[in-house]
Image 1 (cartoon, rainbow, N blue to C red):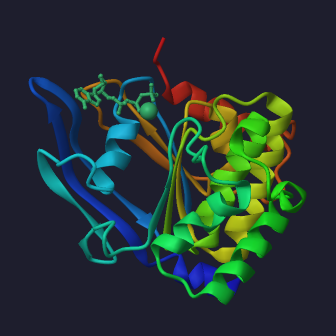
Image 2 (tube, helix red, strand yellow):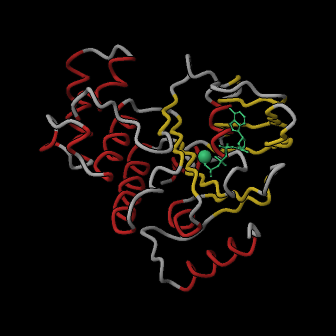
Length: 253
Ligand SMILES: Nc1ncnc2c1ncn2[C@@H]1O[C@H](COP(=O)(O)OP(=O)(O)OP(=O)(O)O)[C@@H](O)[C@H]1O
Ligand SMILES: [Mg+2]
């Protein structure tokens, strides 16, 4: 615990004056913020404000218009830095089995065979998919598909995990289950996580910090620390108060 608190003061991701335009459309408007090492940052913002654009800028899928994103003090580079990205929607590969999907990130990183098998087995077990290891994605439910993506991301033990509304399509019970699983994995590994969501309750349930974005042209409205102890209770008065505070910050409608 002490170690995590100490680590928390280190900056893992530093976003400085980030601006992104698509032609004349100004999306991200001079955005600056830090993400602490070991943080679980939830980013909440309206549709089309540029949440995915931010992740795509961090991973260099898009070039930025101006500003920079630093990881441990150097420009973030997915070719060198160990970043895992769980995209919006299903990102499993249909031609690979569950096991091969989980091992995929390890193949790319040329992890030796034995270690690859150990990590794959371990994360299949953690997300409860050991029994389904020989199945193909088309034989799985939506929540199982998300578990495959989560196991694949965590198996590579990334230094930074980016999650883009990973549970948006799921029903509420499955969402709760996978949220708890994420918290467990995050606590276990100490990985820095940036988790994008539309869902205020989800942000308050998961986040160590919650960052609220504005409508386009997008800036950071507020970033707050979430002091609620875990496991969190969505019906507790402190939880409801914080959820209302975040809701008050949001005037998207
Ligand atoms: N490649 C692109 N070319 C042109 N415009 C783009 C491109 N990608 C995104 N945009 C525009 O940038 C804005 C931000 O899009 P983005 O997908 O980042 O939003 P978002 O916050 O992730 O939305 P959602 O919550 O719906 O996922 C939108 O207006 C979108 O139309
Ligand atoms: Mg998006």
